[in-house]
Amino acid sequence: MNNRLFRVRATLILVAAYAITGLIGCKGKDSAVVGKWVDEHGATLMFKADHSFAEGDPEKGAIGTWRAEDKKVTLMIKTMGGKSPDQFVDEQVKSHPGILTPAQIESTKKQIRQPAEFTLSDDGKSITLSDASLGTTVKFSRSDR
Image (cartoon, rainbow, N blue to C red; front, side, top):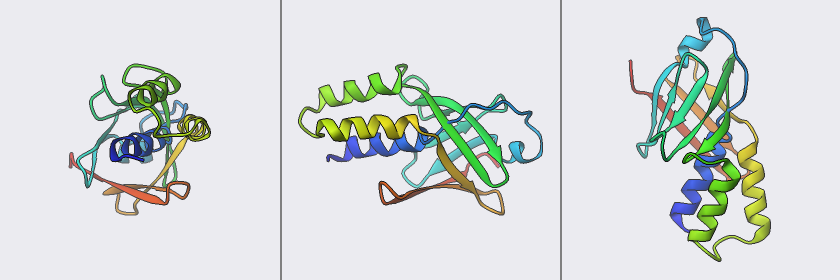
């Protein structure tokens, strides 16, 4: 799998993995999440007080909702690059034919539809997504404090 498609898939899972619906007031634990976060590769997540989030450029990246419970921050992707996650994956597959099998395409779509669960560090300075299915961990650090 080429690096771009892997990164798109990881971002989808992150982000897809980035999002869940749930509206709770931005108090206490929620305020620990609100703000801008950056990973080691420069990818950004912006968590807003209205429980929406954006990954990277809102016109090209993922947009969705988030909720916080204890140290868990759950994300649900609503759109990617202005399209539904399924449409986004289909477009990526069309522009990179033959990279994924039909089963891998469906698996990617399924993963993106699932909530992504991050863990907030005890000191509130980082959030981490561990994805066993990809065998990867992605850590974002707060960049606005």
